[in-house]
Image 1: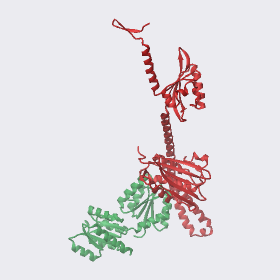
Image 2 (image 1 turned 45 degrees about the vertical axis):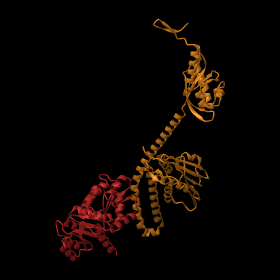
Image 3 (image 1 turned 90 degrees about the vertical axis):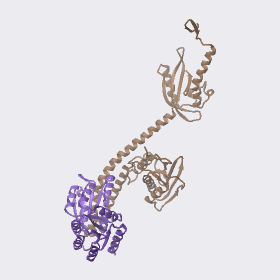
Image 4 (image 1 turned 120 degrees about the vertical axis):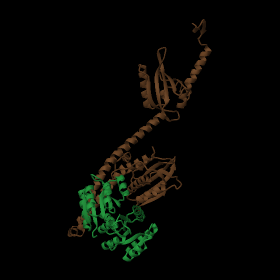
Length: 385
Length: 242
């Protein structure tokens, strides 16, 4: 039967010629091939019967390498994914709605990408003949999602730190008043006892008063640390030279004689936009830790360099090292392995470096030593909104 | 004059007792107050050389109290004490002219050192009815690190000299209530150690001669030259030390 339509008293045939059909199919083929999504057809046994150009490009496999092969056995998927896909395909045969999945996919060159795929049962004249799988590369989206997650994690962590800091700061402040009165009282008593009969007869009285005084000062030091922690604020940024900050830090953290200090400071480094006081605090903290890790002496190396738009400061010691089980916790507030520490040093360092949009990393081997690596962004303002 | 008077202001009894007790033990006269209102009352009743003032107190805080105290006794040395890093208030206190800020828990030896330093400071009194002149002179002297108190007339000046020793007194020859020379005579009776500099107009030569004959240390003519003023003051300080 000839198809057509009537215009007035004219009948116009609309049945396409073979030539027209061929051209139409070619046009569609171009559209399908050039579509920004990967399309793969497989038969019911899993053999690939069709792939479009986009999928070739993304996967790195050529059409010839794929056609007729079992898609699950080309090494594109992890064994878990293969299991999952097999099961899901069967579900589709049982009449389940189309399969929607986000999964990782290994390209021919070995690198993994994220794809979102939709698998639909393909029928010919009502009979299932295989599946059509449409996939989109979502690697970039996944990367951004991960980044947002990390940022959120950082935010939660820094909020938690702030809350701890606030509480600690408040308590610390309140303690300073009674400490002050105790310190005054001890001062007075010491003065009186020193020149008295009791002082001469009972040397322990003076000795113990000395202990009280020392411990008052030690307590106050803890409070100072807590307050420093609660005050990690927005950096007040100014251009600074890292060598100067390091020299400043060294004057605050004396290196004992049994430790050999090597400085490899690159003199040609550009200025960085940082809060010099905060960065100094970080360096002092890390140097102090390094020194404390080497009670029997050792070597301390401080090096600076420029790398990938970051300025790096490396502090290495040949001390006791950090045991593997502690590595995850060293930046957690209140985690400490020191007898006289409250576990705020490194969390403060991390909070400061985070605020500078930099990074702090650590490598350590028990018995061999520890290396801290601080990265600060070069050539842009930090701490802005 | 005699003993140094110290006021300790803190809401904590333990601080008042210990700090006050130690300072008394060191030979100072100590009065204590447990809040800002009591402190203001105390300053109204008696002269204090040094006030130790806690910043955080219930009622009016230490900085507010300091402001009120300054109105009553402008030259009093106020040392703020704080257990907090309430940086805003500390900054405010220093802007208001607090002599020092000490952080609790402090070293008593440091406290004593501050008091000793205060007592050694050169203290200058400027007596003049003209507000602008006083302001200018005060600025010049404070710029050189001297502590400066001011009086508007002879009676006020005499009251101030009675309450404490001033190393140098700038005295205007024409005060609203009494003659400059007469004021000088009264001051000399109360505190013969004070060096008095008479400020006059260049036309009053007879008066200058008269004053110098009576023992005025120097005369300077208005409008005075900053360098000359500093020169005279430094000269006096040098002689006192030497």
